[in-house]
Image (cartoon, rainbow, N blue to C red; front, top):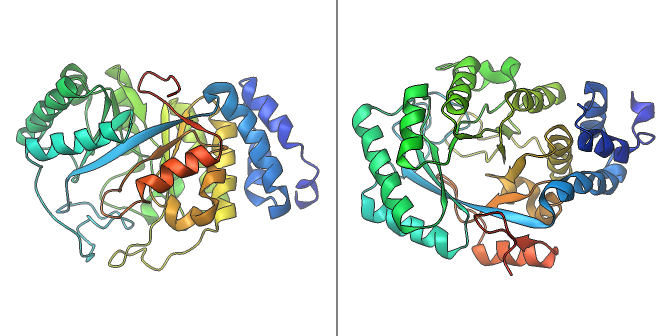
Length: 336
C-alpha cells in the first residue's frame, strides 16, 4: 500500500465524493497515512468537495454548558465524569436569565446555532421540562437555530424537543464501535446509535461526530466516519482531544496538526455534503494550522467549549477573513 501513497490521485477521491460514491477503505487508509508532502494536494481536493456544497461560507455555532459536572458516566476524556478529578465548575441547570444572556452573546457573535448542553446520562423529567421552557424562551427572542445536547434520549423526548422549538440534537458517537469500550464502560456504542436514530425518527436534524486522539487506530477513524455516513447524520462535529488534567486521558498527546488535517480531509471525502465542524481542541491540536482546516470543514464553534476556553473571538473572525472565507447567516446565506 505504501508504494501507492504518492501515486494516488486525490482529485479522483474528490470526484468519487462528488458523484456520491463511497471512497474505498484502502483509499481512506491512504488519506490518513499519506506523507506530509501530499497534504496540500489533499486539502485542495477536499476543498473542491467542500466548495461544491458550501462555497466559501463558514457557519458559526455557540456552545453553552448549561449544566456542569456531577455526571454518573465514566467517559475517560471528560472532565465532568464521575471518575474525573479535574478542577471545574459544577452547577445545576442554569437560570433563565443566564441562558438568555448567553443566547444574546451568541447572537452578537453572529452564531447561526445556539448549542445548549447539559451534563449527565439522560435528563430527569423535571430537568427536561425546564430545558423545554428554556428553549421556548430563547427561540422567541433570538433568530438562531437551537441544538440540544442532553445525553441519551428516546423518541418521545426527541418529539417533545421538536415541539418546543429545538432544531437539532447533538449526540456524538465519539469513536468507532470497536474502540468504544476503551473510552467508556457505563453505556454502549449501541446506546449512542439508538439516540441518533430516535432523533431522526422525530424529524429533527441530527448532529453527531467524534473525538480524535483517544488512542484509536487509523481503521477506527475510518469506521467512525463510515458509521456516521451510514446513519446519514446532517452535522458532524469533529473534536480533537484536549488532554485535561484529572482525566484518565490527561497524558495523551497523540496527534500532530498535519494528522488532524488529514482526518478532516477524509471526513470530507466520506461525508461530502454534511456540515463538518472543527469543534473542541482545534486550538490545542491544530494550533497555527487552524486556517487550513477550513479548506475541508465549513463550520467552527465561536467562544468557549464545555469546561475549556476557546480561542479569542477576534482571532476567529480574523482567521476566517484572512483565509478568504465569509460568515454564513442562520438561513445559509453569506453575510455581506
